[in-house]
Length: 622
Image 1 (tube, rainbow, N blue to C red):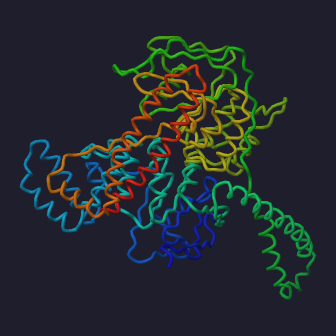
Image 2 (cartoon, one colour):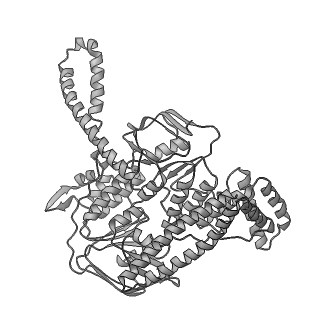
Image 3 (cartoon, helix red, strand yellow):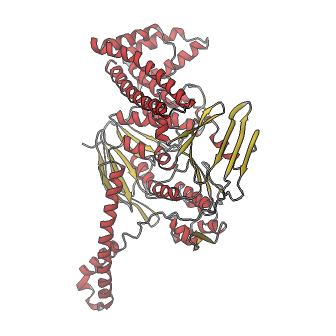
């Protein structure tokens, strides 16, 4: 029996059918990615499944006694809720006891009372075997970097709130997990940990994501929502693109046939005497079906991004001795670089390491503490920011675009009207007269991208451009950027997007240090993904005994293997760190550099295998 079944579900907004009589089921352990252009109804479908919205018709049926959890794009927390309150907001007894235990330990460490309450709590945790859950929870919290449990959750940054909400969702061990853009606002380390975690779990999963590496690693099926209908693809993202192309070609052929038949039937309908109308009702009904099919393909459009970059001179941008920081924190220290025409640079670094500050410095939004930034006379920036553009919500899309330009040059002396350019951006004429305040989040982001490109810049700076853009739009944006004739600086957590577009990286390593790495993101990450340290809290003796009991459930050989893994993993991590330091230091010996990179890759693979085996034995012994 399916965990989830949708039967003849429909949903309409205004005169538009978002979901049109759709039916599908989800079985135990099945992991599905839901894809489609912005506005196709993906989020609406997730809301209907999670119960946040009701369908106009049809049924959503769940198997009895299953746990369902949803991770939204923008979690909301109540005033006064601490991180601990949010994470353990559940009626599950084991999780409730763990929350009390964590809070009691914090009180004891701070010298407050609570020691007398500790032993009864430990006894109850022993009785229901809550320690297993406590161990897994520590792993999740450690990987997500959540340590300060008493901090108010609603005071956290967007990325921190996403981590807390993610921890809450995973800790409650759902049978069915619903994720809407789970990688937004997460750094790359967390994204890679999450995809590994989800791919190993037996839970069922429905997710919407623009991250193609994440999609391929985690899911085993792609469902496309297109024109209110679902199309299923059993395979990876490449298979989906191939079969989607075949489907569109087949549909186009069927639509062409229907249009020919429609013209003939329309002529017959117009000639038909009124008195014979009732005798030919079956043919009139057939005509309506033919008409619907003939115009069913008119929605299928692709985003066309073609514009002419302003000509760029020999001097593009030169940086010499650049240093900057705030409140005694050094973000950039003595950085030098001369940009060349068609440079393609990715920027990588932890949140708060200075990436956005660097972009503001080179676009002259900030003045450096020291050093010089010299821009070429012909250099014209186009800056796409993480923050949503300050639109006038009462303007129409067309009014907004006309304020920028009436016509757009698209190369070889050709120009098109701004309305035609909007249509290429998937803003058809009827949407062009829509108020900006009525657009979806994805449509606003697309309009923001249009505002950047319409000015024909020759130096593009894209800060997290993939957030809120659908996969179809991303594919076309990538094609545009591959042909773009100017410079490109890209800040993105989308590893696929970064790999496809950049030639080398600026690595923001902290303490103001920026290194220039030759290669794309995957080249860089091969040896740099290491297991984060999990913060530990001193436990009472009873918990230590519990750990001993846990290990004792393993066989003799398994215990020896487990102990050896605990020795091998730190040694491998130490060796990898040494090699990374050598690699970052550089060398004139290219053979040596190649050998270091190869060894880092081999160590990383060995570490992955050993860490997974360590987790298997740890869970087996619990």
